[in-house]
Length: 172
Length: 177
Length: 238
Image (tube, rainbow over all chains, first blue to last red; front, side):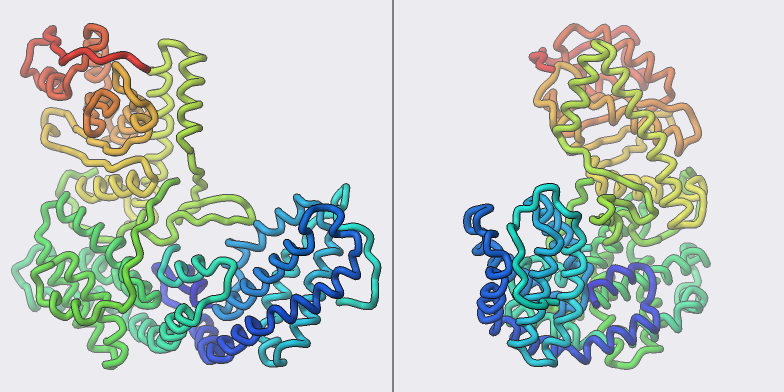
């Protein structure tokens, strides 16, 4: 929010709309700090529950590359930290500049399917909602949705490397 | 754009912000309403700054030939840079966009730095008349950084040492494109 | 470009704007504050470019390189007019004092990574400008040479000062870090004068460094036209 405002206001004054947006944001900062701390504390549990389900959904995924699930868990942990930080500063621009666009290219290059990624973010969403307060979830969700929208915008790979999908119930 | 805030954001990279980082940002964010109010108050004065600065300069320094209308307008045009630095709480913007540049300009044009500094002091007076004490307190360090930079022996030296923004100055970026 | 009669102007630095180079990672583009697209040229590219020119054009590569610099400088000068004249001052560069223009030009060099430029107008009345460029690109990628290597920048400076002065000027490099100088020095003067000086320099014995002062003195008429002295020979490696 403020970082973006500073980029826009070089050699010009902030507009009334920008001022009111920043004022609204500043009023929510204590809640954002609490939400970040809540998510950080719940992270391990979210990942554990999420991957219990994810691994059932893609039972052959681990056959495609060594430590496939361990790497996926690491990446989800990073995603949660980036998501929480973006929520705290109230902006997504810097997320795309530093991470999502780059990470999407990695996912594409290792032949992930859009469905595999959609399932990933749907499961993150589902288990975040279960493990953190509604207020914290409400603050974080728009940023998770943004990450999901950017990350899932990849084409179907010619040779998918995620294995068979065995749905065990509606996910998202 | 590199600021102390973007440094924190980039350094965190793929980990959560630390409590210290969040505390630093929270402290700064809490000052944003005042910084934005100050920017608005200065913006309201902006259309008349050039004219008022020139009138005041002619009154205080009637013999100085330097003080023309275009010069006064240029002095007034420094204000958005100071406001941007104040909004970002980033004194390096003043140093790099104004101080370093003016020092080079003064050397190339063999202009007396004190006459430029006096004009900026008049600009400061004209602006401060319109600000509350709290608003003055957030913009003053950036005026001081500018004045100390271009007129190191001026009266702002002492003030600057006590009102310098709290954070360390970021190292200069090097353009490599 | 006015040499002093224009009113004193004091706008903020332009190239030090925090948003001077903005990269759009979605489009994969970097643009300046006025929208000009720029890209980074690495040392690898410059070495490859120079090697290809030498391979393709042989002994003519020095002239070709300088011509490339000239074309580049002509484009750069137009952009400089747009950025500093039109955008920043809402005026033509010719309405600004020389000191103002030179300050912005040096900052343009600095922020584009071309090196640290100092302009010496001591011999302006005699029709000569001396430019010093520290940390220039070409000398930094050529370790040593029997002749100055910064033809690209010589062409570049010639074009810029032609644009700023409205006269046909050219530049010759008179000191080069590849020959032991601390920074590159260039003498900028009327094109025929530079051409004549270049021809004179070609008569120098192989592997001889002709000092900047020697060239300058000759151009100022302080030595006989045919006199050509050099310092100790250096090994040709380029």
